[in-house]
Picture 1 (cartoon, rainbow, N blue to C red):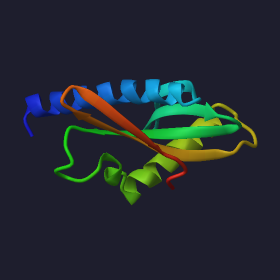
Picture 2 (tube, helix red, strand yellow):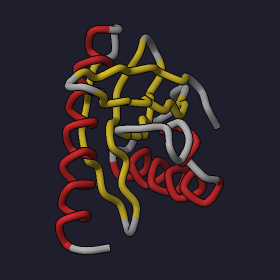
Picture 3 (cartoon, one colour):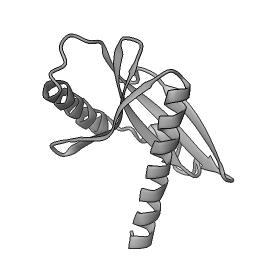
Picture 4 (cartoon, one colour):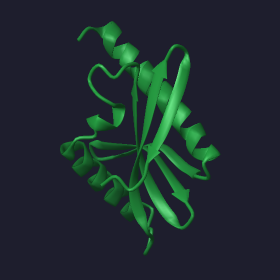
Length: 122
Protein backbone atom coordinates (compact mmCIF):
# COMPACT_ATOMS: atom_id res chain seq x y z
CA UNK A 1 0.00 0.00 0.00
CA UNK A 2 1.39 3.37 -0.90
CA UNK A 3 1.60 6.38 1.38
CA UNK A 4 -1.31 8.09 -0.36
CA UNK A 5 -3.60 5.10 0.23
CA UNK A 6 -2.56 4.91 3.87
CA UNK A 7 -3.20 8.62 4.40
CA UNK A 8 -6.58 8.31 2.68
CA UNK A 9 -7.55 5.44 4.98
CA UNK A 10 -6.47 7.44 8.04
CA UNK A 11 -8.58 10.39 6.88
CA UNK A 12 -11.60 8.12 6.35
CA UNK A 13 -11.04 6.54 9.76
CA UNK A 14 -10.68 9.87 11.57
CA UNK A 15 -13.71 11.34 9.81
CA UNK A 16 -15.69 8.21 10.64
CA UNK A 17 -14.76 8.48 14.32
CA UNK A 18 -15.96 12.09 14.49
CA UNK A 19 -19.20 11.20 12.70
CA UNK A 20 -19.68 8.24 15.05
CA UNK A 21 -19.05 10.34 18.18
CA UNK A 22 -21.68 12.87 17.08
CA UNK A 23 -24.11 10.06 16.24
CA UNK A 24 -23.58 8.46 19.65
CA UNK A 25 -24.22 11.80 21.40
CA UNK A 26 -27.45 12.22 19.42
CA UNK A 27 -28.47 8.76 20.62
CA UNK A 28 -27.94 9.42 24.32
CA UNK A 29 -24.33 8.36 24.84
CA UNK A 30 -21.96 10.47 26.91
CA UNK A 31 -18.50 10.48 25.34
CA UNK A 32 -15.82 10.04 28.01
CA UNK A 33 -12.73 9.62 25.82
CA UNK A 34 -11.69 9.20 22.23
CA UNK A 35 -8.66 7.28 21.01
CA UNK A 36 -7.72 5.65 24.31
CA UNK A 37 -4.43 3.77 24.06
CA UNK A 38 -3.21 1.00 26.36
CA UNK A 39 -0.17 -1.13 25.53
CA UNK A 40 -0.62 -1.95 21.84
CA UNK A 41 -4.38 -1.45 21.71
CA UNK A 42 -6.69 1.44 21.01
CA UNK A 43 -10.33 1.99 21.77
CA UNK A 44 -11.89 4.50 19.42
CA UNK A 45 -14.52 5.79 21.85
CA UNK A 46 -15.20 5.20 25.54
CA UNK A 47 -18.70 6.29 26.49
CA UNK A 48 -21.51 5.86 28.98
CA UNK A 49 -25.04 4.93 28.09
CA UNK A 50 -27.29 4.78 31.10
CA UNK A 51 -25.38 2.87 33.76
CA UNK A 52 -23.16 1.03 31.27
CA UNK A 53 -19.58 1.78 30.34
CA UNK A 54 -19.37 1.27 26.59
CA UNK A 55 -16.24 0.58 24.57
CA UNK A 56 -16.95 1.54 20.97
CA UNK A 57 -15.11 0.35 17.88
CA UNK A 58 -15.77 2.51 14.83
CA UNK A 59 -15.51 1.02 11.36
CA UNK A 60 -15.81 3.29 8.33
CA UNK A 61 -15.97 2.46 4.65
CA UNK A 62 -16.79 4.11 1.35
CA UNK A 63 -18.22 0.96 -0.25
CA UNK A 64 -19.31 -2.56 0.61
CA UNK A 65 -16.91 -4.09 -1.92
CA UNK A 66 -15.21 -5.93 0.94
CA UNK A 67 -18.33 -6.32 3.09
CA UNK A 68 -20.08 -4.18 5.66
CA UNK A 69 -17.80 -2.10 7.90
CA UNK A 70 -18.70 -4.05 11.06
CA UNK A 71 -17.64 -7.31 9.44
CA UNK A 72 -14.01 -6.24 9.82
CA UNK A 73 -14.13 -6.55 13.62
CA UNK A 74 -12.41 -9.93 13.68
CA UNK A 75 -12.04 -12.25 16.68
CA UNK A 76 -8.40 -11.12 16.94
CA UNK A 77 -9.51 -7.46 17.02
CA UNK A 78 -12.16 -8.31 19.62
CA UNK A 79 -9.51 -9.91 21.83
CA UNK A 80 -7.29 -6.82 21.57
CA UNK A 81 -10.26 -4.57 22.40
CA UNK A 82 -11.07 -6.67 25.48
CA UNK A 83 -7.49 -6.40 26.73
CA UNK A 84 -7.44 -2.66 26.10
CA UNK A 85 -10.77 -2.25 27.90
CA UNK A 86 -9.40 -4.20 30.88
CA UNK A 87 -6.49 -1.75 30.92
CA UNK A 88 -8.91 1.18 30.88
CA UNK A 89 -10.95 -0.21 33.78
CA UNK A 90 -7.78 -0.88 35.78
CA UNK A 91 -6.08 2.43 34.97
CA UNK A 92 -9.20 4.47 35.77
CA UNK A 93 -9.85 2.43 38.92
CA UNK A 94 -13.41 1.66 37.88
CA UNK A 95 -15.19 -0.59 40.32
CA UNK A 96 -18.21 -2.75 39.61
CA UNK A 97 -19.88 -1.42 36.50
CA UNK A 98 -21.68 -3.01 33.58
CA UNK A 99 -19.47 -2.88 30.51
CA UNK A 100 -20.15 -3.76 26.91
CA UNK A 101 -18.69 -3.48 23.43
CA UNK A 102 -20.59 -1.67 20.69
CA UNK A 103 -19.60 -1.19 17.07
CA UNK A 104 -20.57 1.88 15.07
CA UNK A 105 -20.64 1.25 11.36
CA UNK A 106 -20.14 4.35 9.20
CA UNK A 107 -20.77 4.24 5.46
CA UNK A 108 -19.56 7.30 3.57
CA UNK A 109 -21.09 7.51 0.10
CA UNK A 110 -21.82 10.43 -2.18
CA UNK A 111 -20.91 12.98 0.47
CA UNK A 112 -23.30 11.47 3.04
CA UNK A 113 -22.61 9.43 6.13
CA UNK A 114 -24.90 6.66 7.33
CA UNK A 115 -24.35 5.27 10.82
CA UNK A 116 -25.68 2.32 12.68
CA UNK A 117 -24.98 1.20 16.24
CA UNK A 118 -24.58 -2.48 16.94
CA UNK A 119 -24.90 -2.91 20.69
CA UNK A 120 -23.26 -5.56 22.85
CA UNK A 121 -21.52 -7.16 19.88
CA UNK A 122 -19.07 -9.39 21.74
